[in-house]
Image (cartoon, rainbow, N blue to C red; front, side):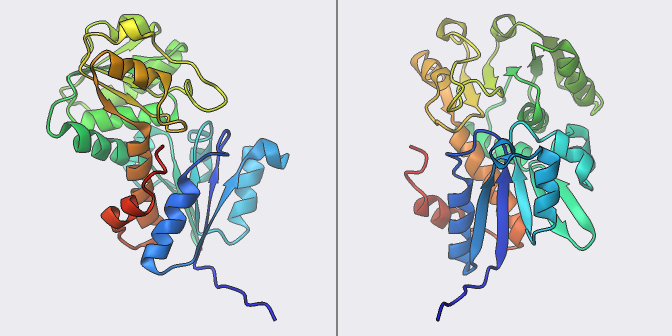
Length: 283
């Protein structure tokens, strides 16, 4: 006679290029530490022969408590959810969705996760002038995080000038002391910057590459790469070789994951125990 284990939380991740995502490990382990049985599925639309919207509808009707959403669907999903937080509405990207009787609700833990990752590495040091390469879903969240960290200047870089200007307009609407500029050339934007950030998919497993050659990181103080599979991207290796302080994508992954876990479960994560339990996963 088989024994069926009760599932307390059914979770998942929708995205492309997620076969090596560590999100299942993080959330299942957080569940174990909390005494909950958690399932967490990788959902890749093209592998399922479905569109993103078809996968989203499927999970909504399949007793999932929630899902994480990653590249390239963070902006698309915003039209399918209710976003209560005006700041997240301004970001225009969602990476965490909770399903309940009232419908799907969207959250963004990338911007809070980035702020936590930055402070864990650089403390209270001001970001200064920041070259932000990539203004898609995660780029938007990180930009709002930079506003929260009181960056002096954010240089929004995108090959699509309309995307860069759209983000700049949203940031300027916050009426903070941060100056916001737009560029299409990352090398030009990196010149004289204190911090350099990669929020493009360049460097990911299956994509590779780097948004900047190493010589164009020289003179900056710190670098962050939103890519975490692999953790040691060419961009971060080059930045480290140039003497910059490094914030890895793993730190954003961990911090945003903790915030998402607490939204899904309503249970505070034991961060020290969770980090220790999954140590080595960053390698």
